[in-house]
Length: 419
Image 1 (cartoon, rainbow, N blue to C red):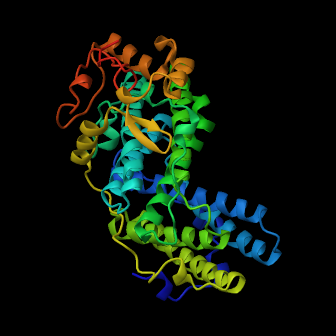
Image 2 (cartoon, rainbow, N blue to C red; image 1 turned 135 degrees about the vertical axis):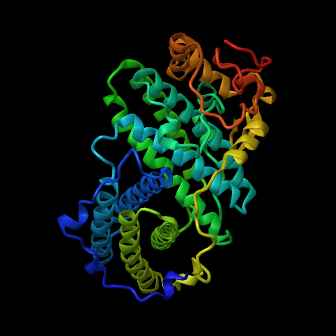
């Protein structure tokens, strides 16, 4: 499908009334996990659309452009509410969090499997193992506090088992800065992947940084605080891949194209008739935004949209599916990697004076104060083992012991050992 070839509605006709904007929520007990995943991701995409247009507005002197941004931004805001309010009243903060981490795992794995740029693929694979571990830590917190198994939420769509331990993910800020992609020569798949993953991780960062302090006990508040800091790293990590030389209007076109691509992708796969109708409505709205962005690019920069998105035809559609074998493969191959400025390196190969060790000593000098470690320890003390839901045993032997939390692997130059 080529959205540039579709006849657009008038942008103003996309404005919704209150009854339309307030949706019928899904049933948390029967919803397909991938329907929840699509809803969470599209909420993040709409948040990014709004924030991007606010930044564009603040960096633009042309009030005609600013008025067009204000119009489409208002509709993006309505779309975000339309999507985010699909979450039911009885779904708890932590249940939603499990959904967020499920998004992070299966989205990142799918993008990595369909990424033509080796450097971007490595960035995806690297952070994949960290979000995978976050799912494990939050799942243990939920089982510890509520005796609710996270598998009840994710079904058998994703494994719950340790990834690169969260304690090993705390790195010096310089190591979150990667090389940007040249969008003038990059494949459209790479442009989309970079924008999608940045938007998704930004949403998780915002969710944890604003709601993490509302959890009802100290251990949970501490876990949200710790993982929120990792999500900030991930947003820096992925955001640095975006091309800083792209103009505001080029970026606007790419954002609108990304939204069209995702709504069309999800419309194809959505089994819930209510949610499917929302994807269809929003796609129609976004096609009008895309055409307006193309018109503005031509009017104000004298550029044809094909200079930014050659051809316009959507690449392979994003379809969530079982990625467990891929995640296991990357976990087995890359567990020991850490970031080293713009590249990656096994922890054991870092020089002793590397800033990774400086930062680790500053934030994790007392392992017993690290929430991601303590949540596992407390679960093991209460139930003798950690909480897992694995199709197969963890592919990393050092992470297979369910009675002890490994705090050395991927963090210490010592041989892996249990704390």
